[in-house]
Image 1 (tube, rainbow, N blue to C red):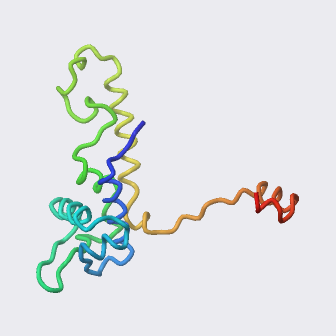
Image 2: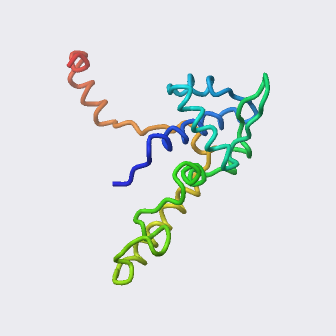
Length: 156
């Protein structure tokens, strides 16, 4: 299963939060409170993202962090790369020479293709996209079944 680290997950949440009001400067404490993490965790993530030029860090009494570019110009792939480093489905899909089986592997090129498709998709999703609400489809059949069973169905 593919899984991002908790810090990377928080990084995407932080970046999406900042993308909702991209011109605003946020303190680490404000960000931490908004997303429900400890201030040291938010600070660590904000510093990592600033080191990778996704955020600008402003010092002083009115300092804090803001997006380095408009939300439509920052992809989720860039956030993941800043937090995790070069990511890949397998070691050999990131860089050559990391796997002892590489010379004999018949599927390395396939994993590289899969990796490319996934990260191409992640590059196509921006913070502007993430900041938009997503409407979930409603299961009309479930609603009809609840109505047919009457108000007591909601109690169960």
